[in-house]
Each structure stands twice: as C-alpha cells, then as structure tokens.
Length: 196
Image: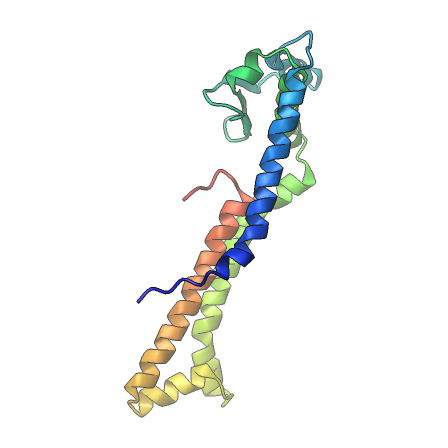
C-alpha cells in the first residue's frame, strides 16, 4: 500500500518558495529593463563585445522561445530569443552581453569553467572506484579476517544461509544503485549539456 506523509510538504515548501521568489525577481527585473530604451539591439551589443575580444568565430543565432538565451560551447554559438536578438532595451543588451561573457570565459579558459568540465571524467573514476570498493570488501575482509559485510557475505555463502545472502546482495545492489544515481545527478549538475 502507498503511504504519503503530509509532513513532506514542510520540507518541500522552502525550496518551492525560494524557486518561486527567484523566478519572480528575474521576471520583475526583466520587465523593468524592458522599459529602458537603448540605441542598439541585443545582437549588436553581443557582436560588438565579441569583436572587441577578437572572437570572430563565435556565431550569434536567433532561436524561438522566451528567455531561452544561452551559449553553446560545443558549437561556439550564442543563441538569443527574438525579444533579446531584436530588442533595443536594457534587458536585451544585458542578456546578450551576459551570454557573450560565457563565450569569453570559454575562449580564455576561465578556471572555474575548466575545472567544472574536468570534473565529469573525475566523477566517472570516483564511481568506478566506489564499485570496486564495494566488491573488494568481500575479498579484503575475508583475507585479513576483518569483521564486516564482506566477510558476512562469504560466511553466509559457505553456510548456505540464503536469507542473509539475499539481504546482503540486495544491500550491495542498492548501495551501488545509489552511487550511480548520485554520479548521474552530478553529471547533470556539472555539465548542463548532459540531459536525461
């Protein structure tokens, strides 16, 4: 039977309120910036910033959507929504130059960006190491007579204690599953291009 505890909402409410507040503030400031006119479009501001840093190979494209602006480092292109691409407002210029700033970070190998990109393979190695650690516990604890779940597994197999074997295999598999889940979530956090 499925059970739902209403106390769950007590823990969930602060995160939802914070997300809603952040969204409200972004939309409010975007609307304020749209009231302030500018002499150039968002496209022109981004192109000017890129050209000032000799980044002529970075393209700027228009994409459908509202506030769907982003920089794609794999294709070296800034993608701007129609309101930002053609807009002659402070918001349009601010968003376009913000995305151009990401292109500058990519071009100048900005250290936090490089570290974030290097962390994905490191996270993979950590995941493999944790899997080996779980499997190695059985051998290590048996060889060195250390009491633990690995040694308990060997003793249960030798004495044919099937309920204990099943419980330990379920425990190890669940642990392995959660480690892989944490690594997959870590991939998505470190590299926004990775989606599931």
